[in-house]
Amino acid sequence: MLNILVVDDSLIIRKNIKKYITNLGHAIAGEAKNGTMAIEKCKELKPDLITMDITMPDMDGITAVKKIREFNAESNIIMVTSHGQEDMVVSSLKAGAQGYLLKPINEEKLSQAIGNIYEEYTEDLDDELLDDDLLDD
Image (cartoon, rainbow, N blue to C red; front, side):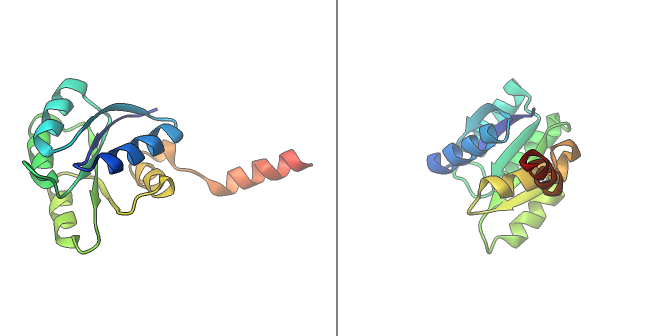
């Protein structure tokens, strides 16, 4: 189980991501609505993983990633972005993010993004189908 910090300026998006995280069996370490709060929460909570919106008021996600990397190299960061922000995604990855998610986010996309970073959380759909077939016999 991962402890995950959710960072997005949209309350609705934060709520949805938190729901997906708990459905996937992980814990919510905390949440923040901008980059400045994300840095404070990261120092305080030391999450395993951070979902970070790129475009936010006060401090954008790219700047926040750079500042977080100055004191925390352990937490993995998945950037959350909209279509048309490809240059910003590249900048985020160069700043130290490990992956990204395109909006609209759903549980399956989040699960895949987590699995891309943490191999132990990669869902093997073939095994699930095999298990279901065995139960039917």
